[in-house]
Image (cartoon, rainbow, N blue to C red):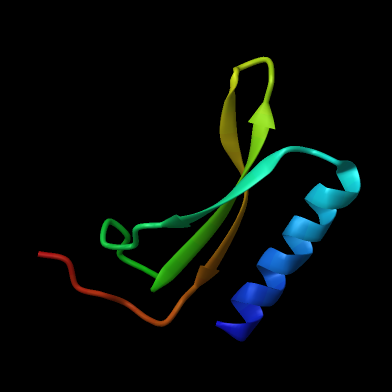
Length: 67
């Protein structure tokens, strides 16, 4: 978790330096086979009039069996 938080902090720092509007999103991991937590950074895309994922940080812990 500490490394994942560090990666997200670096990504946010870059977005702030570039003065780009962004949002941090904690993604539900029940749909993923890998990983315990995924944090995405979505950047505002004015041409599309919506936020789109530009960065991601996952905490991988092992495999999970899905029925």
